[in-house]
Image (cartoon, rainbow, N blue to C red; front, side):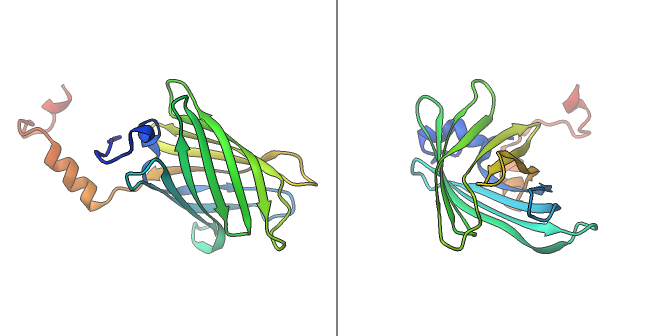
Amino acid sequence: MIEIPSDLHKNLVPLVFLLGNWAGAGVHDFPGAEKCNFGQEVTFTHDGRDFLEYHSYSWVLDEDGNKVRPLESEHGFWRIDDERRVEVTMTRDDGVVEIWYGVLADKKPQIDLATDAVARTAGSPPYSGGKRLYGYVKSDLMWVGEKQTPDVALRPYMSAQLKKVVSPEDVERWAKALPGDLPDDGIAFFK
């Protein structure tokens, strides 16, 4: 269920499908790095201003799905204009700062992004740009990232399928919003 918070900045309504806490797993594969499955937690929040705040934490998973060690962390801010153009500023734990631009697809919750600017600290790994695709598909947040370095052409390197994390407060709020005339047996509700 997608809800539009009453205090959400009006410009952000097209991005409302991103709001919330997400968790899931994916695959990481890039030349020169360990190929692995990873777990991920992503949060999109807002405080009433004209941007979404973004946090992502991922970790390597072993064959049994247990956390092994951190993989990547990101923090950023997402904005959208009246023409559905999306702008993202992002900082990564490895010393990379990126500016991303893209567009929210027409009539579907899908965002295509590409880096416009990349800044790196002296200790960061080689990196020269990337692309990302985010989509809200059957109530899941799915994404795929592509990356390039001076030695490796642009290619997919990470993708994940994330489920919305539901809090007890969400359940209570939804329960209070149910109509009072639901059938006792529950079955008639689906007829």
